[in-house]
Image (spheres, rainbow, N blue to C red):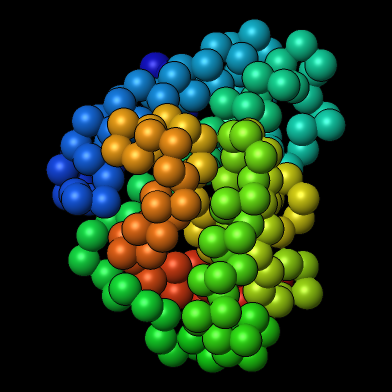
Length: 207
């Protein structure tokens, strides 16, 4: 049995319409995410001594991995981690704007929700080529907006991801073609801020 498996999506492929279409979701989940899982397992199978490592351990200790699998684990392990979190944060039914302690933190550290949206939009729009925009908690327990290339993840640089937006073309091209800004704008209709808030509260308790 493979060590890593595709997690349940948690919603139907058409649940995010009209902002993300059914076919985009089906391909993104069953083809792209599944490929990351499959290729990660293939890499780990080459060095069975790492089969007991968690995904977090692998991604935060890439320098310890053998060179012949390091890039594969970075790319495919990152893709698996990023997409698993992405599906959680897109799950329909939660609050559509932050409340409680996270709202207060956004007001205090990023000048409020509207200012955060501008900063996040700029990070996502300005990411050249493939990558992600992220809201993270940095090691000083402060909120930060960053972008990262390809399938790199904030945990690789000591930061805790609260949520990210996939700006690889496969995430939006069937629905938006080259209109990445429209996809980014519409994504704010989809984020489940209940999930993001729970991640924030968990991260603030840790360490």
